[in-house]
Amino acid sequence: MQASASSKWSPDDAEKDTHFRLTLNKVTPRHSDQYTCTTATGHTNTITIKVVHVVCPQQNESSPPLIAFSEGTRLGHSVHFSCRKGFHLNGASVITCGSDGLWSAPIPTCVETFCPVLRSLGPHLSVVEYNSSFGGRAVFACSWGYRLIGPPGLECEQDGTWSGDIPSCMPIYCPKPVVPENGRLLTEASNRDGKYPVGDLMIYTCDEGFQFVGESSIVCTENGFWSHPPPFCVPPSEVRKSDTIYLENTTLVHVDE
Image (cartoon, rainbow, N blue to C red; front, side, top):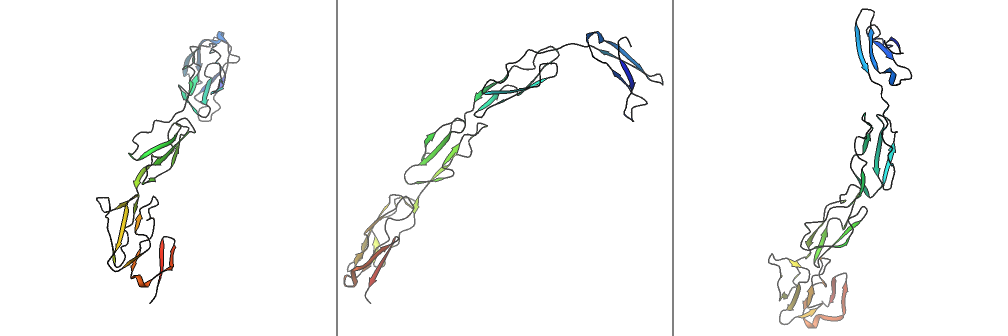
């Protein structure tokens, strides 16, 4: 050996008869040299060691919103980067000091997080509140006569995605109106499928010789129910106004037997 060093057999039981360990103490550039180890059986191994002093430039570490954790500036040391909430990294999250005295990549930057523009909204869906930055919300509403299917609002999350799928709007229909005995409807459903959408007006009439008890017309409301219960058609002599009660969308009528 041509430089100051100590050597001994490997302490590993499986290697102690075949492997030699070379130890350089207080390494300096003068230890750069070729080193040859020879075992008791005459086997030799030569290695070339080059001792260099590498220090990478000091980095301006944490600078909000960029957060940095540095191991140091020597060869092999790394700097780990992250961003505070509401921002995401643009660049490498880890840079390492290389043998050329340079960092493996430029210092990254933090870019404010925004969620993508909401597209493919249905024809009856509208956005009544919108903020696409991290923590912001998109709140939805449907046109009159339609019901919201899905979440009423979405939140922009840390990874720049919305918290769920865009909701949709479905038309609201009322059930088929009841036709009273001795009466009939003068109007029909406005929908071609025979359904009764919000706003549909149904007008009743009684057969000749019978009289209304209740409302002569009803309207389909946004809660999916008719504005009034269907009327009754009874002979005039059997109707007592004081005995007609409207209760929870139902008409209760007392008729003398």
